[in-house]
Length: 423
Image 1 (cartoon, rainbow, N blue to C red):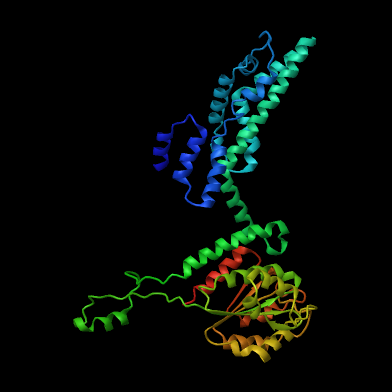
Image 2 (cartoon, helix red, strand yellow; image 1 turned 180 degrees about the horizontal axis):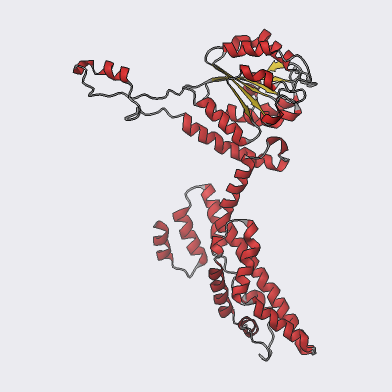
């Protein structure tokens, strides 16, 4: 409403004045100002829409003989206003504001040009070319040039509509696609977009689990609390109490297989966990391949992205990055770091359980499971591959509270969400 009143004061004669008035009433921050600049220029872009500037240079004086199409007559008459009006009516008739995805661009261009009368223009061009005279050939060539300009204007208009109405939908579609894309197949150009998706995911999880729940006023009756609270009323339940879920801030110990086949999933799991410092009480991190080392200190010394890159490359670590050995890695954890286990600890193991036919040491996994609150195993391979070849996954499953495939961002969000929903 502020914008409507502002434009009522500015009028429509001065384009820059309208832009200034709208900017003052709509854009409240620097990011909004950048969005406003782009949106205003796209929405009020009238140059070339009517086509008079682009098409008038090609117009020639010629009799209207054998030229029956209204679009042909309009082009040759140099009627910029009439062509502009016809172009706008054709755009409305084609419903270009309903465009949702870039893949629909060709369909809407064809609809717009057909409503405008492109078929009649094509027939006139063919008729002139068939006459065989030099004048007819020149006229056909001029009409072809005008048609090319008209098609370019139609493409430009559709592209502007995409920028205005469909860019958000395209972003959302791409994000949905990346959410369900196997992380091991991501290309370098997808990583920046993945970071943005993870930021949104972390924000959702923080918003959901960092707030203290309000006292419930309805739900399942807590009979014991109600009886105790209402003793003062002689047992009459004037003040009912309801059962509620207690959400604790979990303590997490995460063991990550940093071999090449799992590295992308490790990168994003650590990024999510260390971004959730507001809702996770404590995190201790360990990386393993041939042996196991603690890497928690890296997240205290370096920013999260830099710390993860150093861990995956082994830079500054005493880790041996040769054949993966789950048995030796579990032994290292029990001998050196078992003191971090308690009944408040959730242990997350991220790995494909492929130990190159070495000793799996399931006895140590049972030891870990007995001394922690929960043991979650995340495997980037599909369940159909568990137990095949050198995979020891089926031997490890009996000692896990939860064992899940974890190869996409959707899987990661689901697992981290279930971790934070502890009662």
